[in-house]
Image 1: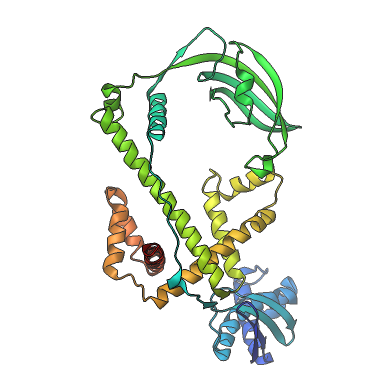
Image 2 (image 1 turned 120 degrees about the vertical axis):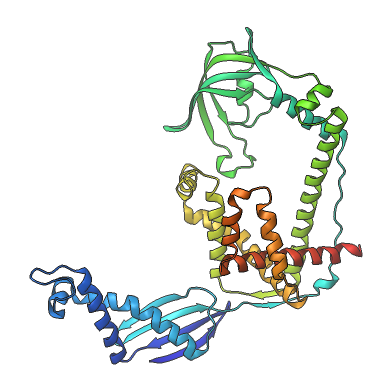
Length: 425
């Protein structure tokens, strides 16, 4: 076997491999042995047919293809060792010639990361206190949740719940078709399209209406911006919300001792969310600063893998998984490849952030020991004894355990960086 390699940009190596005829013959023999077990030839038991008949039945190209499927991966691994290349992900392999077997592999290797003066970065973390108006809004939501619906003999008003048949179309394409749907008539509601609630006001039970609505040009979902939809609706029933009186009895229904206790619980929960959001925004700014002052070089496949990860995350929002996401994109007149293109900038920033934080973890000697790992797993299953054994067994496996360790190292490093960046501001 002849091998050679040359360094390419973006942390990739071009690996060239050429085999001797004798090396190819070994894999041709293995291919015949495998195919003999798969193909049926009259007059012979499986695995016993002569090579000439197998080749005649399947063709020489099929035999060679079978040989290459086993040959190239094995030879590729040998060539990596020969050239002392440490691959970090799957290569792109191009078959150059069959006789002699010659192929070229573009091999992704370890990224290069040069850190800036990360210890000198200083940022202010914004602090926001929860006000009484925000607490009152949550209380009103709770009153809505515990309210009752009573039929009324009048026209639709804001705050009502209507039972409605609704059909929505864009051209010949149906986008919404529901019978006896409960619809909350709220002022300035954006569902299913801005202006829909307003079309229902003053309609009476039994009313049927046709109308068209257009999404604003600046609508937050760009795929819908400026598009017009037609709707056919029928009001089946109108119900008025009867909300509970705001007193200690209502607070007990909502799980608190009294009204003051309920308000304090709401304040604490809201403050926790606001503080968490402020921390996330701070961390995003901090990572942005670290990216600006660092120099990175890494193979493009890392970005593609991160795009794959994001798409898998998105697919969990659909009952049909990836198929559901594909249908959603189809309705939005977008291909999966176009969607991947939209995701790449964010995926690239994720890769950069991970590489930089990992490098800082290495520089700061941030580690997660076995006790910390075990404690994290215990916290995962706390209060859920039914799945405790399965979760613990999962994180006893090497790969999930190391993945958890990596995540904890990243989080620990971010805590360290956050403390350094805030403490002197």
